[in-house]
Amino acid sequence: MPAPTTTLLIEGSFEELADELAHYVDNLKKTHGDESSNIQSEIQPLLQDDKKVDTLKKIVAASSVLNSAPEKEFVAAYNLLIHLVHQSGEINTFLPRICGHLSAPITSSPVNGPGLALSALSTIFNTLDPDDDVRYHVFLALLRVVRSASAFDALKSQLKHIDDWIKEWDISEADTRKVYMALSDVAGETGETDTAYEYLIRALRTIEAGAPASSPEARGLALKALKAALVSPTHFDFQDLTALDAIQALRKSDPTYYELLELFTSEGLDDFNDFKDEHDGWIESEGLDAAALNRKMRLLTLASLAASAHQTRSLPYERIAKALQIPKEDVEMWVIDVIRAGLVEGKLSQLNQTFLIHRSTYRVFGENQWREVASRLDMWRTSLIGVLGVIKNEKEAFIQQKQNEVRELEAKMSGAGLGSGGGGGGGKRHRAGAQVAAGGAGAGGAGGDVDLE
Image (cartoon, rainbow, N blue to C red; front, side, top):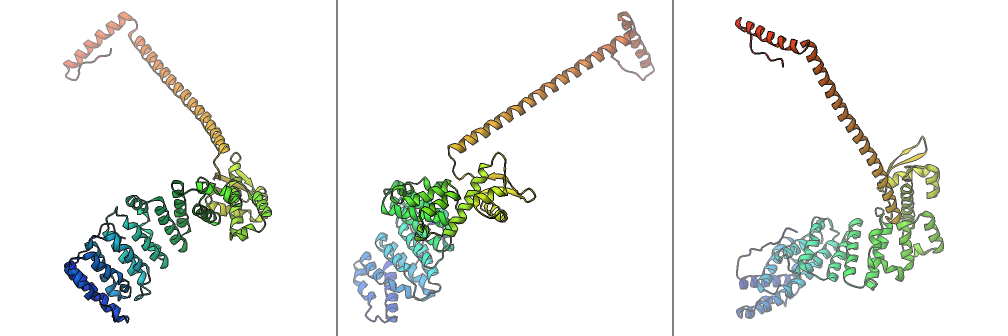
């Protein structure tokens, strides 16, 4: 959708244009077998009495037939209808119904129909003022068309405006949640799982300021978000979920799900296996991908193992194999996977059968992690104090060295002066003699003033 606001420039009075559109609608209806359609005649007395709203009620009621208009006439017909609606001054009365028509299939063009509908809806959206909340309803209709046509790519470039639009529309938390959920559904159906999850989380955040966190709607969204996060191949940080009130409410309503979340937040593979034994068959019954969960838990376990080895900065293959419950020959494959997931950085030493860790990610940043940070800061502080001490000592030694060099130079200069004079009186006679000699040189035309003092 282009930047707002667009103006439709259509020549003609309201009466002329309404008569023209009514005639077009009658012809379309008759083309499709409705010989009784006579909208043009019905609106004539209304136009004479300047009853624009009543006139448009009849035209809009029959306007669903525009979906059967030929492709080359479709956009022009809807643009004319949109223009008349704006002329009526009753936008809220008519635009929702028109958006409903555009959300339905375009029968004249099954292939290009979604594109035609999106074009008309975009025109409606852009002819409205930015702060007009009718835009909210138009946008939802647009999302329905995008979803039915699996055309999420056509919407991607506009996602950066969503939050600004919502602020301008000044809609309720419930309506905001509808927008985010519609976006999440559209993205999810087209394989954009990360984007779908992002808007699902945004929808959950609106519950904190609106509906109770334990409401049926909140529970449904919380479970949907949790399932999406658990099986996602790219999502490994679950603290964004645990911070939400709706997720915390699952502790009471769905304790098994909450227990599973806690496992993936901070525990390891052994604990996950104990959970599966305790709740035998539960994962499968809930429609969760057991293989995906096992893989993710192994990656998270390896990430925790790497984070716990921050002092030695290395992990032997044997330790990794034991923690992940895999053959030793599979260790390198899992290390490569955890690096690709962005959880750990390092390199493999096949010679030493060791994984050398450069950086690791903490799954939970709690009290123990803060203590470790404090410990590292103390070490850095001690190191920096040592470095500053060395710099200070070197600076003092440099200054002392320069002072010694200056004193030595002064002593040499002083010693050189005493040796050439041969005593106080001799020095004076020497200077006088020098002046005479200089004068003699000047008489010869080759000298100048000389001062040896």
